[in-house]
Structure formats: structure tokens, C-alpha cells
Length: 190
Image (cartoon, rainbow, N blue to C red; front, top):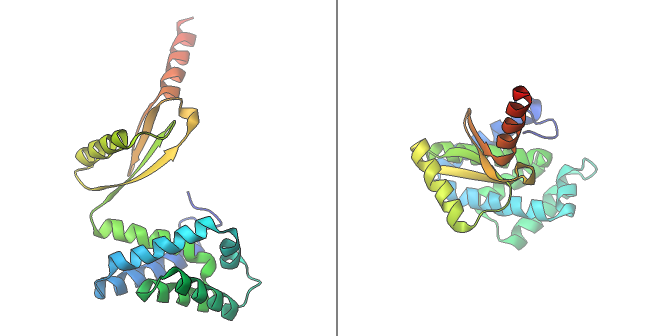
């Protein structure tokens, strides 16, 4: 689900898609898609961990030069370089840092498509063991007949079981849904 006005068709989503597409084409031409993705992933992890960095990225109070200088120093300190770092610097110089998280998501989507990955969202009540997670991935690979990029979500309200979404298909095998079905059947039996 998109946030902060970045729903499909919004100006922010359009900007993110254009920047991500341009970066993807350049990374493909330079044969550095994985390197760029790794740099963007490292920056995104920094963004997730630091409230101060999120404030810098989102705040219109900072000038483009201030944002570019701060981002440049962070990239240098984190060892993020090359095309990914240049892209982040360009977003800062163009006062587009507030769109950067959406740009990173759009770039990741382009990478997945180019590598033939299918995105699967799996919701479970509690974090599964690594062995169970690998079983889920293997099952999804068999069903999708493709490599699967798994987005695991923890939702305690499911009680047990899982809910899987691949593309437009969804399978709800959660205990919550089964209990609701039993409740409904018992009401109708009265």
C-alpha cells in the first residue's frame, strides 16, 4: 500500500517511476544492476534506522545544497559509491530526496521483473523458523514456476496458518478465517 500520496498515478509515483526507470536503464547499460541495488539497499537500511536521516530526506526546510552536502557525507562514511551513490546525490541536488524511498521501491520492482522474480506476500501469525520459511519459499517457487521474492509480514491476528498473495491470486489458510467460517456455519445451523 502506498503512503504519503504516492499512490499509483500520483505525481510522486510518476516521479519515482521515471527516476527509477532511468537509473535501471543506466545500471543495465553499465552492467551494474546488482551493485546499484546493493548501494540503494544499504542507504534504505540507513533510512529505516535513523529518524534524523528520515527528517533530512522529508523536510522542505533544508536547502538542496544542505541536503546534498549531508547526503554526500553520509554516503562517503557508509562506503556507498558508484552509480547508486551518484543517483542519491542527484536526487538530493534536484530536491527529490522526499521521493527517494519510492524511487528505491520502484527500482527494486524493475530488478525483480528483469530477473524473472515473482513477488509473493506471505502473512503469518508469528515468525517461522528458517526451515519452515525455506519450505514456504520452495512451495511458492513450485506454484509460480519462477524465483520468488518473499515479503514476510507478521500479523498476530491470524492466530495461525498463513495468507499468501502472488499477483492477483490470494490463498487464505489462516486459523482466523477458518474460525470465522465455523462461526458462520454454526449461526446458519441454528
